[in-house]
Image 1: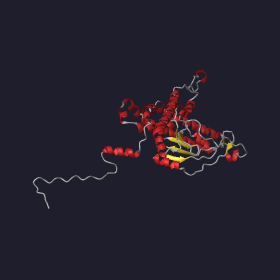
Image 2: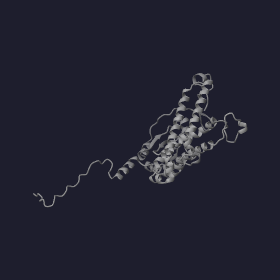
Image 3: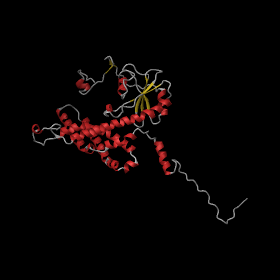
Image 4: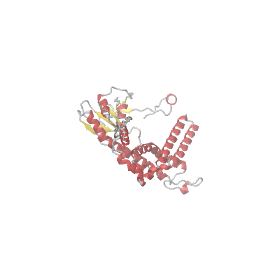
Length: 365
């Protein structure tokens, strides 16, 4: 990232304007070409046909920005089979219904097809470094789309869901523990001498403590809704009958409310910051005051999350996350089958005619 330094900086571009410049492996600047939509490769349509519910989209492959961003999307698996100048022949982005993200890349025409894990689209702070994604699969050049789709769905997707779930759980647990450690931090009484009462791990004021907590609260706000949704989807009847699990499930609504309030606090703060313009001292003081109010409200709102049930519940349902994502149509059919009536069948089968009463002669031809 570079900040332009010329006579236009303070007038046309503004003080906070930066320019992203890409370099190749030899340090030469690359052109920042816009994304251009190209023709859809036949492989994309064929994979989409065998992966119902998935999105299969070709990736832009212009030298420079496109290829650098494509490399940044990879999650583990070693260096990519391309660089910032030489593009692969084909690159497809696959997104599954369970949050799966993969890149299918063919380095050269007629070469093998590599399918590798990609970073979750919605989360840059998932503590992914401590979790290994499923290893890539290399398919022969003559592998059929049906074979590729089956291995993606049955081999890669479960491991990916499990890895992302562990990463989200780790991130949330780490942030919750961070708030727990801040809770008993020493804060001197107003008017007391910090130098005389200072302690390791203490803060000069509540505002300083709340500012340190914000980075943890941001992680909780980002990861919490994913964990809640996964827990709600994976919970079973026997969990509600298990006293140890049922107690945590009973605290889940308070957790959901706290997460929703934190999201509102962050959104309101972002809106307020966007409305404050200029670089005057008064604008700076207004921004600082808005940040202090944000930190104070967030600290109080996050109280149910410091020692909340999400880490334990996430660990409890963790083994189920790798199970196949149920198809909605199949779920409906199964539910209707349990009621004893097939879906869509609303007709009533007429009862067989009752036999004539005894002693009544039958009419015959």
